Image (cartoon, rainbow, N blue to C red; front, side):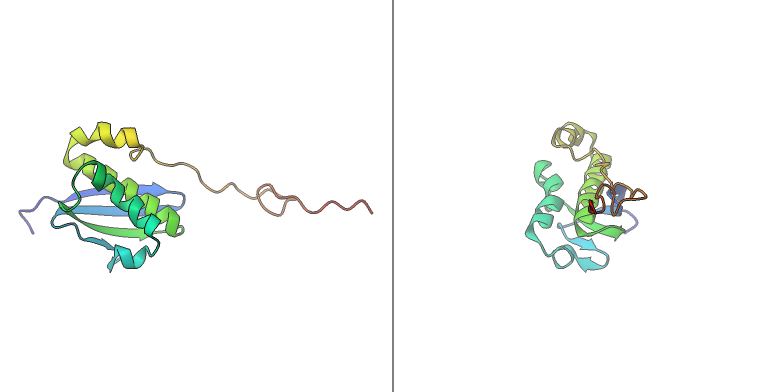
Amino acid sequence: MTDQAIYNATGKRKKSIARVTLVPGEGKITVNSRDFKEYFKRESFVTIIMEPFKITNTENAYNVIADLSGGGISGQAGALCHGISRALLEINQEYRTILKREGFLTRDSRIKERKKYGLKKARKRPQFSKR
């Protein structure tokens, strides 16, 4: 494995962080030492993760080894998609226009709003009582 090229990238979404390694191979995706279809049971998450490979026509060209931490399953799927896109960009700069147009290189910065004092959640107020 010393002569093979290894491409690393980090993807983020919400509180999730994905450390992604791309190695030339047959398209096997491993997430936290498990198969990604076993880790992401919902088909929509699988579709999100495979999207960067589909638009760059590199579906079975690289093996993905990902280490996911933090957040929930949805945020982790978005973080993995972001990380794969960044790693593909490291492989070939010509993918930049395609990935940028689809919005895969932009870090989705929407995070949970903090809770304020006097409120039950970030915006939910206690029930008003007239008497």
